[in-house]
Length: 427
Image 1: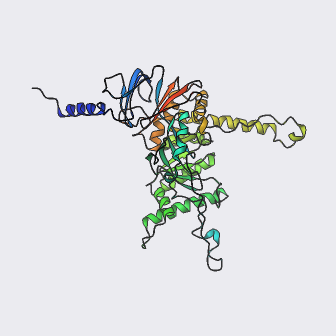
Image 2: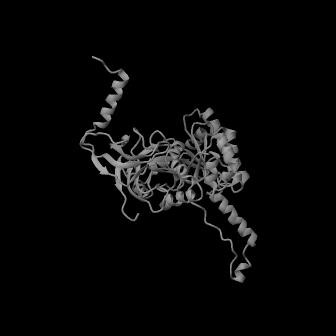
Image 3: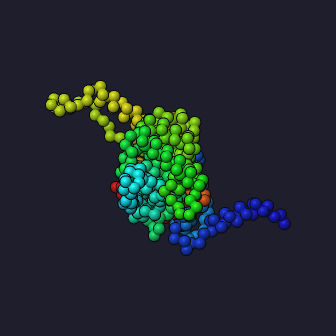
């Protein structure tokens, strides 16, 4: 009798094990007659997706399956990979910022501003994974968001971000803890240096301190969690998400990353397109804000008295041109070959609408979908789990009546880690 090769027998066994799932599982679905759209693969018309527990076990042409699955007729619906919000501060309940201890008297020691424990604006050891508000996560389904990276956004070293599933559970469903250490050159934040020179010196000194600390740990066994966390960034053990918007701050961020060999992803939109070629050359990805800045006015006040305080008309028009150029930042990043993802920060309720505006401005539809799915997943370090409709990946899906880039398209169902959620009409 002819026997199958061992590899073939193993493959057949895996297929049988995958599809012959126990009907007792609550989250086992067969999505029939569904149009499947996933980046990098041909669109499948009238396809089938089989979900068992939290995983996709089949995606493609219709196939046979065991009894016991919940069958859903998806005629007229398109399945996309679950959308990813690459950065948001929504969904966290953070503690109050810690206060410093009492500094020594200026007679007995350094001034309070020079005291080594004066760390206002430095929260490098803050792990936001412990502060996720699970009850706030499912509100993101209305925008098709099934995964998001959450960060604190506070201070110079803002702490460690987390990539989480947008699902309410007893404990947060974390896909990637300690995804990035947030850094910023922003002047906002209590006690943070006010001038650009002071901010740069402040960051560099902290990075030098962290670098030295990891190379020469204290002999008494005590651990300084803040300096240690910064040292991981300086030594390339922890990726950094560097927030910078202006052309100068972006260049400063690039210089600091180059000096210390930091594994950096840039967060911000603003003038990022001015450095698109350099970012592409260095392989630095960008998390761009989907929302647009408020459009500045281009006409002076009609009231002649109030007009006296208005800037010159030429200045107003120049500012409007700068705003218009900034709106095209994402389009320019795409044309330069820079990998990017979208952040909802500040506009979580109209995240998808904002992405559609970028498409209206010239961003190719396929590039926008990649930024919402597989490119975002790769940037966040979870490309092996989410970002595409593939066997073995988490069953994170958005089922829409219509194309995702059309304003009249409606989200009907969302799957997060295999759990199905219906979206009410009108949302």
